[in-house]
Image (cartoon, rainbow, N blue to C red):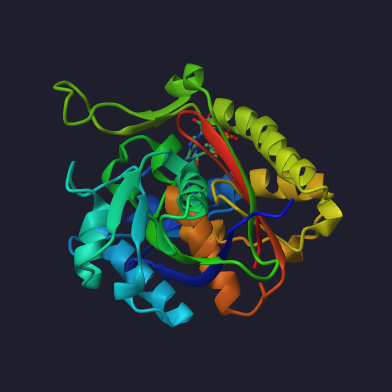
Length: 324
Ligand code: UT7
């Protein structure tokens, strides 16, 4: 049975900080005991963008959102809701989404943030779709915006080389016609694995480093299994096989994980959108940034079937299948 209200993805946008830091910069300028060869071989990363003082989670989110609105030809005043997925808000409250409303000049609608680490964008898509299908909203901005550079331990080479900053956004619009839109979302979390990828502390916690810690190998092991599960669910729920997928737009953590998932789906590499080489891991921003790039350069076209998947701290993981 088709959805009563279809939730179409009509706009894409992105913002990357001005400053680019290469792997060699990390070794030579930042004095980190690492090498371009190690980082490329283990992760596929060659460089990352790092935010300057004026580039905040809210300001980058608003810039990405503005692009998505322009792409769709929609004015900010028409938007009913703003959802920002982020693990790196600029402040505890007001929510980044509310600040984005102000930056866009919105005086109506509502906004809130959502915390699901690197899976945040997939979680936000699912939440926005449910809000629309409840009949409360017709146009929602879904944004992933992160400044992970501000919570990295720059003395820990096993994590600080992996992440970058940026923001990506999509505009979702309710429609009663056509076959396009979000076909399914599948979300999971398991708090028992909270200690393999986390940032300790928050406003209510007195003693904390507020720095990211990760047992990389353990997270890698979980990623392969859990992403496969989320992808299988998406295919089964829609009566599809890997052959039906035109594009995979995965969370960009590690090229080896991305290639493993493509192999599972028997997708050739030119059907997989990869940005991890240039953006590194931008957490909740990575999928919308990759989507923005591939839509704007003409790879992903109207009617294409796009599979998104992500895994992050929690652990959280999930998938979304979208007919563009
Ligand atoms: O977005 C959230 C989800 N996150 C992920 O999906 C990340 C999943 N994990 C990974 O991508 C990989 O596990 C990493 C890229 C983080 C690490 O790759 P690995 O192949 O699992 O390496 P490892 O952590 O087992 O480290 C291997 C060696 C160690 O040296 P010894 O003990 O073998 O002598 C590390 O000390 O590499 C060393 N090492 C480094 N060497 C140079 C760790 N970091 C670095 C570094 N430069 N930056």
